[in-house]
Length: 343
Ligand SMILES: Cc1ncc(COP(=O)(O)O)c(C=O)c1O
Image (cartoon, rainbow, N blue to C red; front, side, top):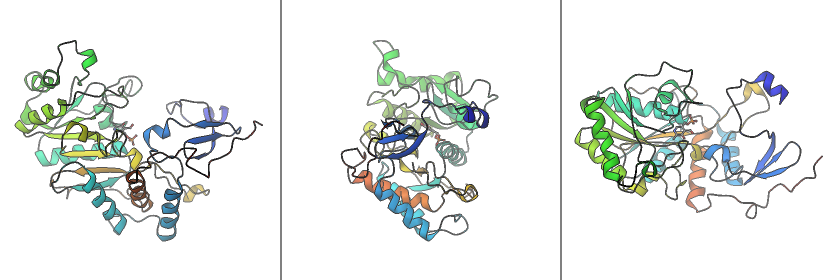
């Protein structure tokens, strides 16, 4: 801990004082040999558990082929295959396209760029209690002040916030329709609908308290968006990839969002090399599924995005979740670490 204090900024706080030596399935083992059930999963990133053999196999296979190719310079097939797979899984029977990036925040940033370029409008409406990331734009979209925003302003402009459908806080008379009405109210009070490119919402609030809106809520929101030519953007970075029992939480609400961002459980592996100069990290693959045919030609990717192993391991993850084995448990996995005596 003392070395950590000296070498790493305080801003990167951690929830437990554990230092992990290894992890398999649902169990993590600390440097003292204590084993713990991991209920955090790297904050919702490990639907298939730590190091399942299928993922290790996919990583190993990819390591033998190629490690880093910038898709903008030299494309490769697994990127296309992952995009096709996600397009087929995302809600809506219309043509879709997928862009693979590196983090959830980057996916949200790019979704906002797409919405602005497509609608030629500047404003974004987001929600109270929302979390969309820690970069300047996504921190501006994020609601919670402390610890995410305090001291980090000024924030990005053209971001407007309305209350979320949190019926518990809305009084007895609150309904899906009445809370959706906050959106129409915003058009009268804070921003003209003709200036709004998109409404961005987490279908189920994650960091903001795991709030599930009433079933009709997003249909009402989408109807208002359609009336004004505004796009509905579902941030499924946390709720996507079967974390609510369906591939995308949007499906529970019967909506087909215009843009979906998803990440976390799609990537969730971080192979690294012992040689720091050669090390690379694939923390979370991120995808923007542009549900309609938006023009994305001017979108720039980047040289470190969508590294070769990302699509390969993500495809394996999707297959594993699809086979109905989203969680690897101690009982299922023969390769689980046995409990070590405390040293
Ligand atoms: C809903 C949502 N959007 C965006 C993000 C940002 O993702 P990342 O941490 O990969 O940048 C998160 C992260 O927790 C999230 O829960």
